[in-house]
Length: 318
Image (cartoon, rainbow, N blue to C red):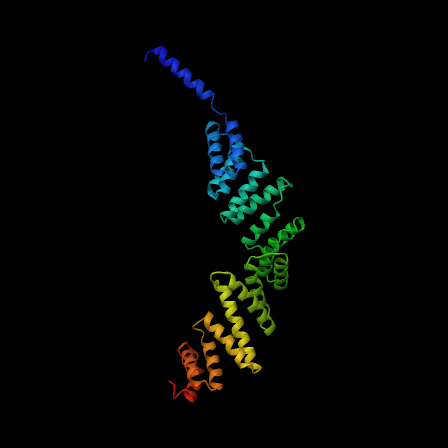
């Protein structure tokens, strides 16, 4: 190729390059894809715009929003930080940064960004995000405040009642926890976590039979709707049945008490007291063979009181 041909070829390359989409056009193309929920495609357009013009603030911000939608919160955070470095006074960037930090469980930093965003632009409705962030940061009184503000703004957002109920429980306000959970379900809520929380509240508030009845109802509802009980709920349900079984024995309702002790054994197969109490009831009803097996199991699991009954009733069975 001669020198003239080379020059012509270079001019053609420059011509075709100049005919390509501008960074602004790439951002607009990305915006269309983002509006259509094509976040990967939109992100690619914003990346091309950034490559052509690295100081294009909107491309960084919009790509960060796409990364959030794709669950790539580390990448989103990097994009929002870049957007902030280019234009520090845009509240939207600080708000999105705060949400990304919250998703990454960096709650103190998230609170700083969210609070800053809300101070910069009072039109930002950040109460719900702040409520969640304060809750996960363990600052329950602040969480309750912002859940309440959110409910004032959006009273139909029934999930806020459940969120506030959890914060009330963590702060020790069990009556308010119960009230909010009941309101949540009356308003059409369906998350089984509410049953768990109100059940725990009843266990924690009183060991009366009425409280144990309520705790068992709610915790059994929770159990029926989840694959497996978490450790705290399992412990609370076990305690509820065990406590109610003791109370029933005090009023000579042995058959009902035996059913509760059997429930405890289902939940906690090594619970020595329940084997002891159930064995004692069986022996009193003349079911010595089965009762003695329970008493022996109680003894093996550490209940030394079982030995006395074994000595009296179980000589012919063990």
